[in-house]
Amino acid sequence: METLIVLLGTFTIALLVIRLITKKTAISQAGRIAMAAMLVLTAIGHFLFTKGMAMMISFLPFAVTIVYLTGIIEFTAAAGLLIPKTRLLTGRLLILFFIVLLPANIYAAYHNINLESANYSGEGMSFLWFRIPLQLLFIAWVYFFSIKNQSKTV
Image: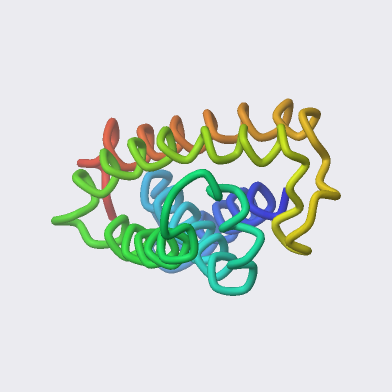
């Protein structure tokens, strides 16, 4: 839920600030700024909740290393969305990244993993009713603001 709040809140603030500064409505730029902010939030989570996130991919070797690497990928993607020369490639790779992450979220829900407390007290399968549509929103968001409308910048 925090990710959705950060995404929508940052989008709204970015739209307002860009409008005040440039007198233009830069929807695509605000969308990329919002996704970058959300990625920074989730990347930080990789370092704060490493043990719980490793539980989400415990079926893979080197789970802790993978958690750290995906955190670094998210920081890198946040920067890549904000650089005009890299935002198209970053957007495409980020969509692939979101698709690859979905099985870990399904595994975590099936096993009731609570990533913050690193135990098995999570919400369970009901979590997926929120998480899967949210993942689809992230994919659509990146596509719309970084790929489809990538030429519309301020």
